[in-house]
Image 1 (cartoon, one colour):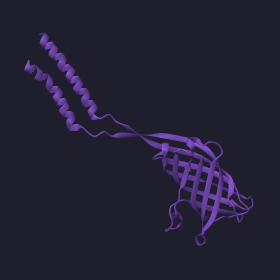
Image 2 (image 1 turned 120 degrees about the vertical axis):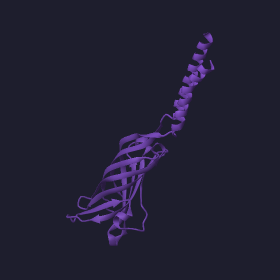
Image 3 (image 1 turned 90 degrees about the vertical axis):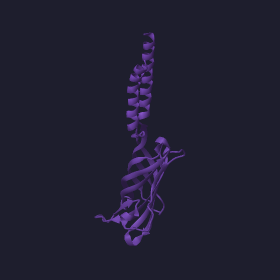
Image 4 (image 1 turned 180 degrees about the horizontal axis):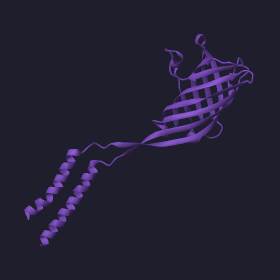
Length: 224
């Protein structure tokens, strides 16, 4: 009888030993939650001189959503540097804008950023790269570009993605902020970790199976 029990125990022991040699820490496979939506914002644009020798300005755009924006992102503030670009039309002044001063040869200035926020915990942070033209004849500012998302809070923690936008403003005639409308298209994703089954789970299963088989075999032996 002892020899029979040993015969039954050996496969279970070997199974446990084999798994023990190959146990690895649990890993996680990353999947993503995605957020795709559009929101419209009433805007105020302030443009101020910054480095006249290099033709560089500072632009600050603030926005308030025309309706309740998805996920509570009812407001934004965008800060960029801008540099004048060649134009064939004397009535039009063109600018390229970027959050990174190094793009325009400024090495001693901070990198600026965008923030999209509301009253709740959800926020998005990013950096802008866009362009605009001021048409003095028509009295307009027209712009478009991309904001690269670098992080967020709330449901947007560790967010990546982009915001593309178009904007048109009525050029202020008194030096105050120019008023307009921006249409923003959000394409955001956030990581979601899904744990993989661990070797421990498999070992427990084998242990339970082995115990059941041993019990059945013992009962069968006793009856014989």
